[in-house]
Amino acid sequence: MVLIPKGPFLYGLENESLTIDYDYFMDIYPVTNQHYEQFIRAGGYDNEALWSKEGWGWKRKEKVSQPEHWDDPEWNKSDYPVVGVSYFEAEAFAKWSGKRLPTEQEWEKAARGTDGRPYPWGDTLFDKNKCNYEESGIEGTTPVTRYAKGKSPFGCHDMAGNVWEWCASWYDNSKDLRLLRGGSWSDTAANLRSAYRHWNGPWDRYNYIGFRCAQDAR
Image 1: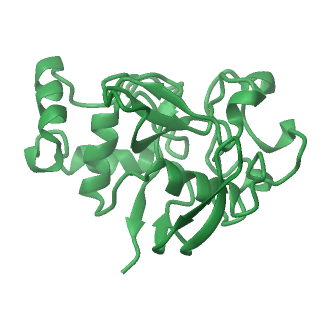
Image 2: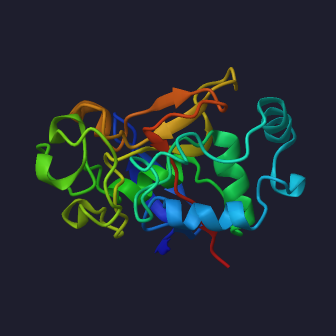
Image 3: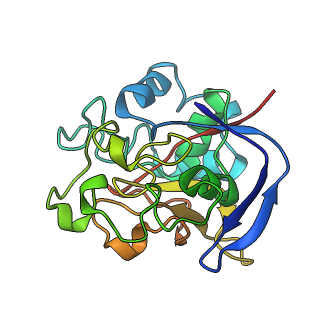
């Protein structure tokens, strides 16, 4: 993890000045299949204490015991981001690891720094060589260390492309959709902007959705 210091940053498509008044940590990489396997082996899917009430109810109803695509070799390589996880699964993993999912403001500051840059690497123009997106032609995920030149000012990798990432925030005031950030391997450059907001239902499990964790600074 890397420390993200408290203080102001430029937030959103309009570059609004916003202040996060506490230090926090952010995962340098999205959670990988190798790391997520530890959660499965530790009995994470059987430990009700790790799950929200809604998440536990969903898990039992759907009889979920592992991510979607978990047994598919195309998606389960060890150093690739875990995919096919719902918001509920990501939330349970985060609690198991002693962390939590980031708010969208925490995620965005970690992704773009403080100066309002449109993409993590800071260029005004999009750079196709610094991320995995639709026009990369890969048509799937890549190792989380592959695009080191596209890391954020704080050193976080894959915050543009590879997989969308669940955030703890709601998408809007209806509070029925969870927020996603970062874009994925199947998205255009416009969706990879650090301020771009996307959503899914917390139960959705797709091969372009993963997550990373945050942690309070002690």
